[in-house]
Length: 298
Image (tube, rainbow, N blue to C red; front, top):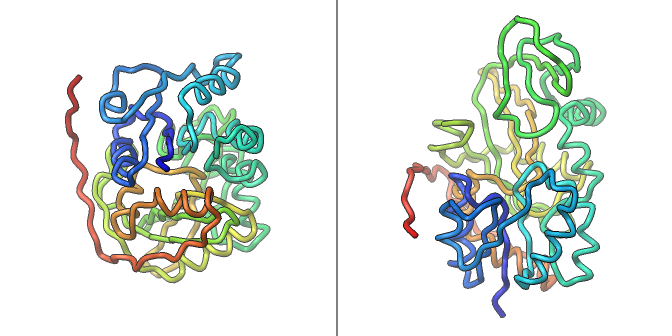
């Protein structure tokens, strides 16, 4: 039976690949955003207009909309609501709605960059030196998306809910991961971001990297993750590898990870809904992605 699968923030410039993947898997794509004036509305099979994330009745409104639209699976992607989905995961499950999100304990670590730093130090995972005072050259938000709100320099900054971080020069790797419902890795697919625009990967190439695979496995054992997860690392010229951050959700550049393995939608359904153990497909290393803008018309 076809599953009705909802994706968040479907009006973002990198959301179309996920809508396409759901439809190509033979399931029903339900896009969502705070208004219909975006390509998600025109590309998906159905659409839910979501309340603003600061709405005091946010979750009661979302619940009514999910039930009305007969949603089977939610793939969260909006940082501001990740913890809310996680805290209500069991509640929605009892209503027949599966939320593809990790446990709140793990999200608490990875959504807070300073807690993530202390976690790494505790478990001897190499990561840039980090402070809640302006001690280092890079200043970035303590919470939320790592690609926005970054300052690099020595001028004094307002450090409220910010961190400073040691500057490390090297090659950045983004790692597309899919973990099963028990937190075991199905796919760990490193890719180099060849080009970036507005914090989003527009060109990339899949690379085999044993040290990254080993670190991802170690980190996911210490703080269990499930579903699609996005790691970021940097490697120096002398091959020292440092963890940068985790986006504990599906990410825009994961189109390349899927293309290098398989469409992840049906394996997700098989494992999370039908309790089938997934056997990963061979990974197409050195596969490249070139992203372009396209139009939709309503």
